[in-house]
Image 1 (spheres, rainbow, N blue to C red):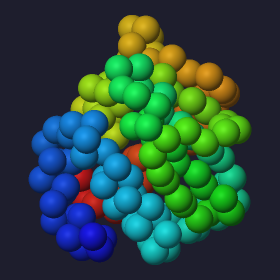
Image 2: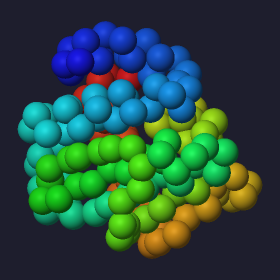
Image 3: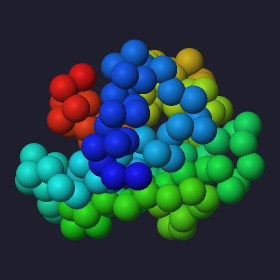
Image 4: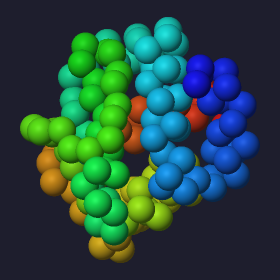
Length: 139
C-alpha cells in the first residue's frame, strides 16, 4: 500500500488516537514512507543512527516491532533486531497508544507500564520522531 492510501486509512485513527496493535505495522510503514520522503524529517534526523524495538509482553516475538534510523533513512519491520539502542517493553495496548499518541511514554514509564532498556535520551529522540510524524500529518 502506498503512502497516500496509508494516510487515508490511518489519519482518522491517528487523529482519534485509536489504534490497535494489529494496525501498528502499517502505521510504521506510513512513518517510514513519510520520514524517507519529507524534507523536515531528512533535515532533522540526517545525522541520527539508532535502532529501537518494541518488545510486546502479551504477543509472540514474531509480532514485536523494530524501527531503525541510519543516517536519516528509516526502516521498520516485525520481529526482533539486535543490537538495539533502546527497547520499549510493554503490552500491546500501551505500545499502540504510544504510536497513536494516546499514551504518553513518560507517564507509562512512571506508572510501570513501560520499561526501557537503553538510554533515556534515546527515548526522547524517539518522542521527537513521533512528534514530527504527527506534525507532518497535521495532527
